[in-house]
Image (cartoon, rainbow, N blue to C red; front, side, top):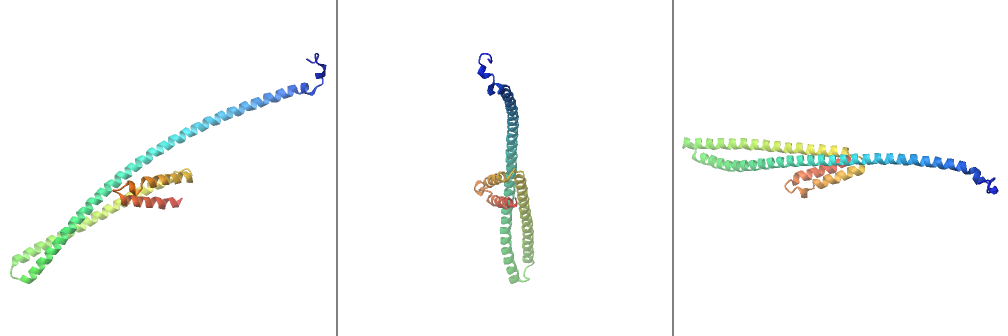
Length: 212
């Protein structure tokens, strides 16, 4: 070409052509390396996303199992407490009737004096019955207190589960999302037969969220 076009013999583009070709090859290789790095980064991102999705699914399953366990425990505790309250009410009613009857017998005994030993025997029998009913009332009160203590243990387990759930959050946004989910799950409107426990759990969640 130099022989055909003498004007290109001393032109600068013809002299710079090898250097430009070298730079083009260098830029091409650099672009290929960058593309390889981007592909590797994309694959890593895909793996991290898949791992995060798996962990999220496992967390949802654990949360669901924990909620089911807590609901079952709360229902059992509520049923037991309700039964004890009914027994306590029945014993209290019997005791009140026995106290009225015992008072009537004491009045009758005072009026009758020592006229009949049978009257005293009957009065003693009623007194013994009243004492027995008082002992039954004390036992029922102890059982009711034990049921309340068991309910407090259930609330303690719920509190521990809430703390563990919030501590496992990745950041403040994730923690706030979990708090909203727990408040929604334990809303009293969703637990019409466990309003008391739901209110206490909701109060506990609002208290625990302030610790972080």
